[in-house]
Length: 313
Image (tube, rainbow, N blue to C red; front, side, top):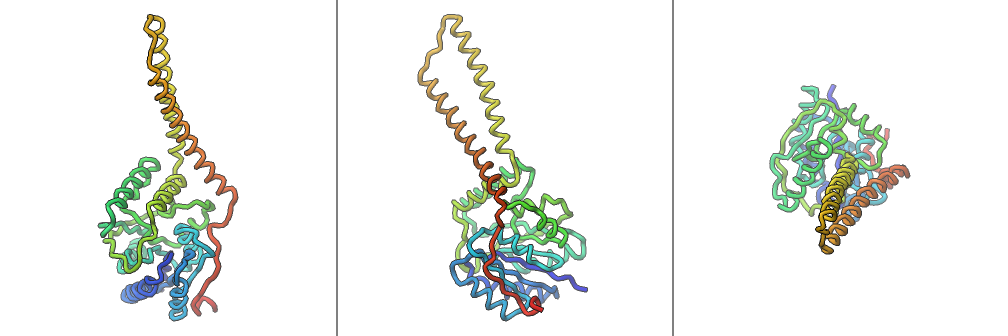
């Protein structure tokens, strides 16, 4: 008996890529004789992405579509797809064809024949990626490795998960998610395949510098509390500094060499004040995330769904 693969594709304003990706996945999996279902998740697109998904679903019963009521973000789209998936294994991939569909058969083989629960696709080359984006990615993954021990360098959301892994991910209750790290945190036996990032089929990347920074901060905060510990460490270091400075000032006073330097005092006050504000900002960010979790609002809201005939029976 062949095992079915669920291919989950978050899509945000990808109207020109839906049909091409569906055909590429269909062709690649047909050549490898792998049964599949294809799940597009429209993350509140403002273009004709949903119309393109609907057309594909009507033409092929193996294709399904979910549409959010608004833009909830890629992480929410991934978890919506995982919850809807029915396959024995699930693959998450991008809608822009930068994740090559021909890699799917290699991932499937490692899962089925060699017993890996997770097959992660890592970037062998990053294509025509901007230098600024590449440097930002290196900084982000470096910080994440130092703070959490998770080495996600050259990683991506392009990965295959066994049904057991998917079920465990779906049990996780948190609202602020980081799919890449969460799937690795589970600890299941994993393998790696490499791929070369292809050219984007159509359109432009939806990640602006602002969104990238927001995503990086959210990902770090959702997976490690080290920034909070850094605040404590900085406070302790300044306490030691204050003690040493106090001893030095007292000695100068007792020996008749009163410490001078109004400018030095002002600079110290500004430095300490700045550190206090930054520390309060870090603490406030974590408190805000706790607040979001306590509200327990849903990760996403579905506005529409289209299914193939097989799913309606």
